[in-house]
Length: 83
Picture (cartoon, one colour):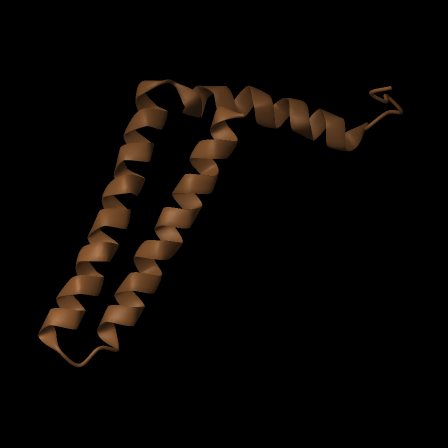
């Protein structure tokens, strides 16, 4: 679950940074460019903080066994139902 939250935030902030850079590059005034580039920097800092949290909490190591389990489920989904 926590990996999903990190993944969503990482993806969203990465996209936001790129979109802000693109939008800033299309602005004419220095003030507008600076505003959008500053927004992009904020989004990038959030991505960096997420990477730090992932590394500090050992979540990278957790991803491999989860991926292996998911692979097995994909190969043999079975007929298990929740009811």
